[in-house]
Length: 235
Image: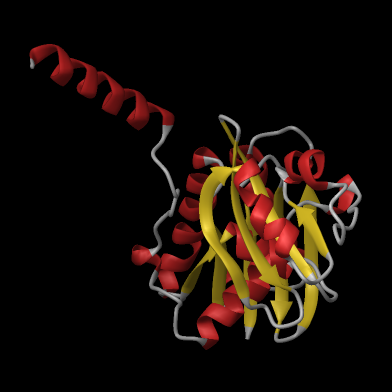
């Protein structure tokens, strides 16, 4: 089966094509352009370079969240549009799980995305078994202290929020350095996680592909705050 993985959850963008266990093509872009400008040309180039078309794709994988709301929407909309004509199954992949799948070795990987307001979207995984150790959640980086200090295996941080964790925990015994250039997510991780989801029966139809933001958008938060303030005044 050929899997197309798409990564648009952060500032970088990526596309990967896999045939079974073989990685056919991958591109990673951190060029400062918007995903709306780069994603579809990247997908087109990937397919053309490999001599494939959308008719050859058996599964699409795409970040469903957490991550940039705009980036997630662009990736999901593109995959919906490509998958819908052939009703090709889609896997709404956790961005944090895809981050973990992009790295190999032994030990524990803590995936962290900068969620602003002093928070990170974070989850942790055992690299050898892919077992999840922490659920996806927006939390203060400082709240990870107990997990980091009690981790019995070598631990490293990845994602665009990794720097926040290294700033706090780099001196903790067992924490290993990870070069900044190697901390980012890659589309092959999305493809690998998508295939595991499909094997577990968790792929969905294109029309059922939805984002999972893990928290309200800024506009929704501000609206809720205004409504709460209005309610308080009226009481």
